[in-house]
Length: 278
Image (cartoon, rainbow, N blue to C red; front, side, top):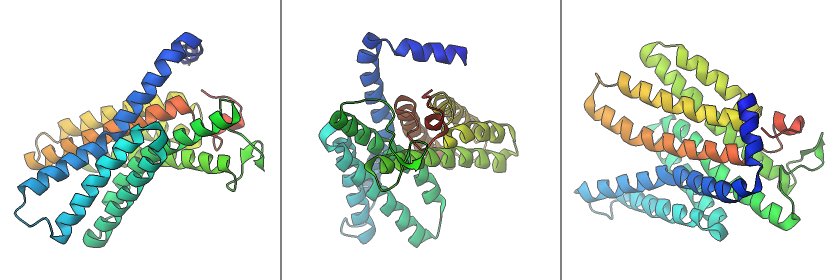
């Protein structure tokens, strides 16, 4: 913990923050959007390989999804269009999950989508905070009266921002615990379940959020490679599909967690209640 505090103090240096922080924000956003670009590329590959006409309802839906993935990702990279791009990606993701729920009666896509939705909410909340800071000429956590103890009410703009930040943390914890559960079901190992649960609780409640966001990203990559090597003896087709999608998903969640580490947990958190941001 002492080393972490020293690193945070070092980052307070203006010259370091001036060059490093914008670079980290850019890297986080690129990592976060990777899953959408990856999905769009896979959709293009499918449309090129299928013999069904493009006017087929299923293929037409895939084409619309692909266009929205590219458009939303591009707009999210443009500062003035970030909110619009985030909204397009959010609508696209929810439509895809609803489609799978109706056609396949499966909640699995929704479970996967929770983490990606958390990533989108991080982009959304980061842009909202940037605009708020520019309008108020102040930086740092956004706090206002509302629910007491400096916690904003949901009726306020700041409250909606804090809610988006909280829901993003929920999304990260859902996929983190989900990965641990899958590992337990496949191999009966409680080690990853323990580590994922220990990491998820502080992120969910917003306690030492920046530190545990980085630890969660580390644990997720460890879990990814553990699952990869335990699947080597299984169906190769399934393994290829797993690696293709899970790598993109883990990369994007890493971007979202990096954003969380850069931005902080927001007002609905233990860190805000104790007036610390570490």
